[in-house]
Length: 174
Ligand code: S3P
Picture 1 (cartoon, rainbow, N blue to C red):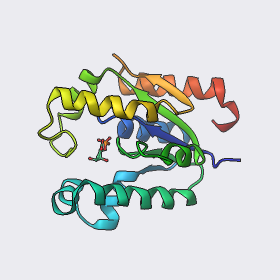
Picture 2: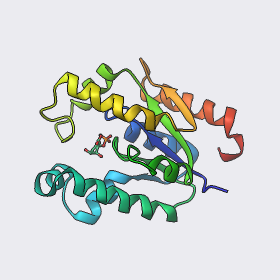
Picture 3: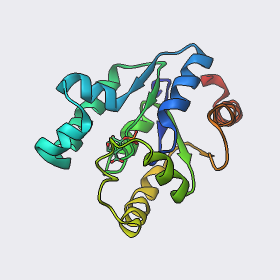
């Protein structure tokens, strides 16, 4: 029986943090972000980690955060956009609870993600490179239990969609 966390995955700009926080509030659960776990442990920002030690080191820290998540139960967990996108990661997330992919149109996602300047995976990438990154990641996101299309929706509407989807397919977990 998997732990009963609710795990949000999706590309940068999908709204995982905002929606996750709202969902946790609505469900009376704790909210956890893998990026925050890493920043707290390393005592430096994500751009600093990328600058000083590169992407591979950050991915290794994600693996450690994922291991630490096995101690959680009943939480709402927002993952970094790249966290699910390595072999075995989606399976590990699915074992933690119900995985929800916040999907959306790539142009919208990039526009939203680009509003904050602290995403190293967006920096200096062309539109074509971002498209390739998204294409490479999509098969991983697709392994989520539930897909919610966020296109044209505000955070509250996305929350409503997630809750409706959860009630439909995993009623016992809401
Ligand atoms: C990343 C996404 C970021 C953060 C890091 C790497 C990625 O999280 O984990 O900058 O590889 O897509 P968000 O998805 O919350 O932006």
